[in-house]
Every structure is written in structure tokens, then in C-alpha cells.
Image (cartoon, rainbow, N blue to C red; front, side, top):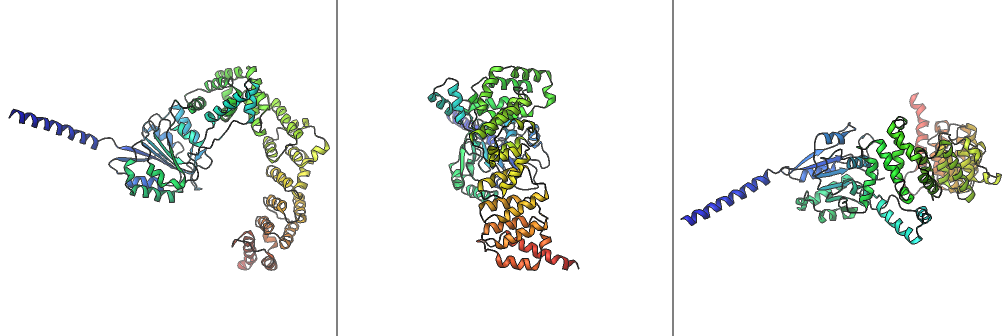
Length: 564
């Protein structure tokens, strides 16, 4: 009897413990699925439809019309176990919507600052899984790489070519900063991060794919903190890939700490400048790899901030560091790309290493070297026009000494024109209607920055284009002319004659592209429509710009009759 009682008692206790465990599981806190929907809601709705409501709760973090929606979520004390982000991500800088009326977006910098600042410690602190529905969200291609000037800098610093190559490789690994790297840094220590290494399916396609996954019975994996091979398999044809958050022992963790040195909102402006100063004492090769972040921060300092005692002190200490200044400017002058050199010079000015006049002198030195090397191309013209957008380089242009033969070369003339030369501008007008495709491309770059303002110049260009033979150069010139709403009747009639005589479908389309943007009502006549139908070259597709022009001319012809 005693034995039975003891056994029964044991059974009762065991049953009670098991029941208590079951009750504990049943009333365990639900997992929170946070969604950030800046474009398609298809993905979110599939998670909501198939994840059981007794196990998962959902909250949409985006509040329409509220710019600080992420901060709002932080203040509400929301803690996410799963995060689903849906949005276009083509250029790797932000999640955005394809709808023109949408105002909400999610810049990567915002996530980076939140991660570095611990300003929202609860929101993402217990994440087990992140789902990034956007193109290239986990693309492993490096956004920057150690180029030739970095290896040269290391050799100048005393490293052997072999050592320089090894260090360059290490810097590439540490500072490559791919989309995948950035997401791993932002969501550090998160066990599972899903995304796409290339093009991702749009929501209308991703939704049914998710539905197929859930209907397979594998949905129980969601929230486990373990990667699902089945989910990756369903999206395999769409480049889905999976990774985990960055850990402290990985090489990229050093880069993450450096990024946080400038992104942590808890640090003052003076503290961030002190960090920049310490960073400038490293190898300039490493500074070059980190230039984007230093440049972005230096450009944010307002004049009012610069005048505060702490910031003024920090800037003065940087400006007085002659060793760092000399090494930095030496590296900048040796940069492979003029655009990088110009950016480094701008940072030097922002940090007090160059005055405004010294910066202009350095830029003129760079331009002179490009001319002397005979290597000026469209990118150089683009750069010089951009640098002189505010005409700040006008006086400095006098320091650019070119021979008449050099000044007449189209690329050089384009740079002179960007710097304000009237002779260079006239040379660009002639280059736009030349037979050289390269000359036309250079002129196209120039006129994007310095549009033709004089009516007589436009007439001259239209006449010159009409004299060009049907070619790639002529199409390029016409594309430039299309940016102007031509109203000069003489020019329009000249282009009509050219269209009717053209023997190339590309030329016809290019001319039609000019005319549909012009005052075509002035030339709208039934006989012109008939001539266009008779002389047009049939395109391979069913509709093109010539068809658009014909329809608009017909509408313009009918309009007066309808109003009568």
C-alpha cells in the first residue's frame, strides 16, 4: 500500500510538472514579426496569412506620413523577433518605393546610425531572423576596392611590392563594404539574414513563392533562428541567399567600429573630429578606403558648429598636423582617378589643410596634368563642369596655360568651356555637329551642364546637324537637341526635310524625338503627315517615336476644326 501510494504520488507530481510546462509553453510570449513595408505588401501579407496568430504577433513599423517612424517604433518599446523589409534596393543606399506618391523610404545610413548609436536598443536586440526583399540586398560585390594608387602609397611608405599587395588584399577584405557586408554589420549577431545577391522578384511574384513555401508545411521553421534550405530553394532561381550577422572576431568588425566612430549619435562633433584625426595617422591607403565616410561627415559640419570651442579646437589640431597633411596631399595627388583626387582635395579644405585658393590651385594643377598626359575624356569634362558649377574656378582658369593647338582639341576645349571660356564654348558648338562620335560625346557632356541659351546658336546647330551624314554621331547630336523645345520655324522645317530624306531608322527616330518635344503645331499640315507615312522606314517594333509624331501632328491638325 505504501509503495503504491508513493508511486501514485510520483506520477501525480510528474503529471503536474508536465502540465505546468505545457501551460508555460501555451502562454509563452508570442514572437513579434516587425514589417517595414516601403513598397510591396505581398510578402508581409503571406507571413501574416500563414504564421499562426497564437504564436506570432505583427506590427508595421512604417507610419504613413510620419518621417520619424523608426524613432517612433523605438519609443514605443517594440521588440522584434523577426524583421521583414520590402522595398526596391537597386543602388544599395536605401529601400524605396516604386510608387510616385510614396514618401516613405529607409536609408541604409539610418539603420547604420541606429546600429552604431544603440539609440534603439530594444527594437532589434532580440532578432532571430531578417528577411530583406529587395534587389542586391546581399550582393557580395565590393563597393570599393584597393586600386593602384593604394599599392604605390604603401611602397612609398617603405613596404616591398609583395607586402603592399598583401596589405591591399587585407584592406579589400576589411573595407570592401558590399551590400552584404553592410547588412551583416547593421544586423550583427543575428543568426539568419535572408536576401538576394542579384535581381529579386517583385512582390507580385514573391508573394506566391512564399505561399508555395508555407503550403509545403515548412513554415514551422520560421522564427527558429536557423536557416531554411527549403525557403532558399523556393527562391533559388531568384538569387536568394542567406547569411548571418557579423561577429566581433571577423576582420570586418574593425571596419564596423570605424564606421561607428563617425555614425554614433552619442558622440559629439568634437569627438568625431578627434576620431578623424586619429584615423589620419594610419596608412594613407587605409584612409583612402575610408574616404567616403570621412568625406560625408566633414561635409555635414555647419559654420555654426565650427565656431564652437570644442569643434574649433579639434579642427585646429588637425590643421596643425603637418605630417598628416603632407602624407594626405601626396596621396591625393597620386590618385588614379581625377574624381577621387578632387574629393580628397575637398576634404582637405573641410579639415583646414587647404584654403579655398589653395584648393583651386590644386585643381588647376590636376587639370594641367591631365592635359599634358593627353588623357582628357568625357569623365574629365563631367568633373570640371561639376566643379565649376558655381563658377568658383573662373579666375583660377587663367592659371591653365595651353598652347593654341592644345586648346583646339575638343576634350581640352570642353574643359576650358566648363571654366568659362567663350572660345571653348564656340568650339563645342562645332564639335556637336562634327563627324566624330567621340567629339559629339564630349559636346553632349558639356551641353548637359551648359545648355545652349542663344536662339541663333540653336539655329546654327540645327543647320549643322542637317548637313551631317546619317551616322551615330548625328543621332548623338539630335539627342542633345531634343533637350530644347525648339520653336524656330526655320530649324523645324530643316529637321523635317532631314527626316524625310533620312535613310536610317535611328536617325528618323532621333529627329522625331526632337520634333515631339518642339512646337510641332507650327508645322502640322496634312501633306506633312502623308509624307511622313510615305517616307518613314518601318521599324522592327510596331510603334516608335515617328508614330508618336504622326499622331500628335494629326491631333494638332484636327484641333482647330473641333474648336470651330
